[in-house]
Image 1 (tube, rainbow, N blue to C red):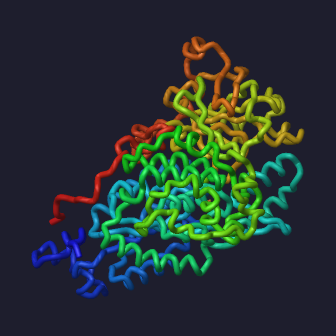
Image 2: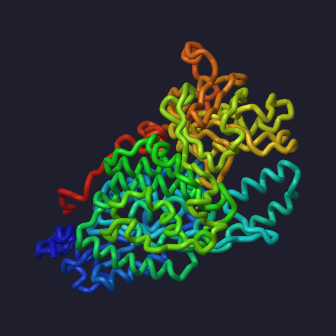
Image 3: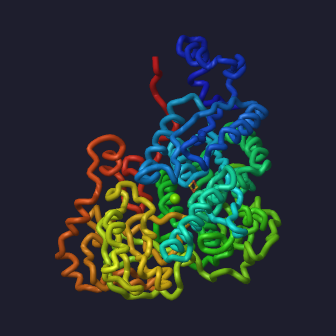
Length: 571
Ligand code: FES
Ligand code: MG
């Protein structure tokens, strides 16, 4: 057995080794320090991240597996981001959480880590951290909650909040009924049960090769999740002995596989910024255009909200991730490895579809080509994205007059004004919502529609924004416009009344005015006045160094890896 990293702390007779061991001996036997793997459990359990509050129980199962395999498990609470609670947006702290976890893994005597996440930003931040410190790492996704129902109909987290609140504004649902649905939405422990960002990133963690195969998508209350957590603890010890690190698992092939799966699943647009950021930590040359090139022609096979009808519990019942991956197996990189040391495709076995309503076969997809489309044009020279699976086919080619909002407050103040000059062909434009502008690139791009149009029965319009959209949301929304308005992007120079042209087939998003005029215009003063100017703390560091959405919205100084070495002692 090779000498482990933790031996640099614990082995020997000198004063420093004495100190490192002595303070850890609160119940740990002497043989805990005899050279066996020290496995951190990076645990995002928090009462303020309700989707992850059950992870302490999952951690107990991981611990048993680690002990059983001859390792020492160590609970390491790390920064946790609750998507629904944090203002102005959990995304503002994804990179901070990743940085803090990276530093705690590097600074502590650990040889490997089990990553416990669930809610939207938590698995991305954990994987970014693990990639940068490059210690053996394996994810246990916390799993989705069970399906809730309201008046006999399943309620999808997030998606149905958007739908029901629009029904109230359209006058089709009473406020009382709306509020009654509130207590029906969250039926159990676990994260959102739609194909939102949490479900997407949990499943993609497995496609990337970073979970024990067969774990992602298990509902949070399912007993098998704890059994998998136990097995993952054992696997973490094995990975340390074998020296199997994120740099060995996460190849360009793994990311390509994730893009294929993202399309087939109808997954969240947020996966784009998360996968780009994780790849950036490893030096894997993934680009925005890869999402279109690899994913655009992949068929949509999974009928889950927001692109479709069902929920995560149904996906699991219908055969789960492996049944989906088997349908697109010919598109997967057969060499891409997993934490087991074997390729992903080796683990798919003969996974079958048990309910073809939920998971379609390759021959009868929900849509023949469903991946994220990457748009460019004079409105988005560095790119923008749209999720055709969640958009209206009739709007994929559209020309309309811009109705511009300079901030989310401006939008809320004017949207429902009966005198607002807007019709169903208008294009709603919202800016100042990128990483630097808001700050943190919030999920505001799926702007609500003007009340007077909702009452006329309008349910979708073209919307353009430099922010993100909740993975649970839907609509014909052009997202992640880059460069963002606050960083000098042309979106900041569009004016109400300008004709906007969306042409998804030709991958274009343009404002149809002479280029010289667009270049000559000053950025909107109202937009510039609304953008963030933080004076201290993380927000200041964030705004000063965050990069564009087109490269994953990571901090410029966090791209790449620092490895696991620490040269100097603490005493
Ligand atoms: Fe946590 Fe949706 S709010 S996953
Ligand atoms: Mg979200």
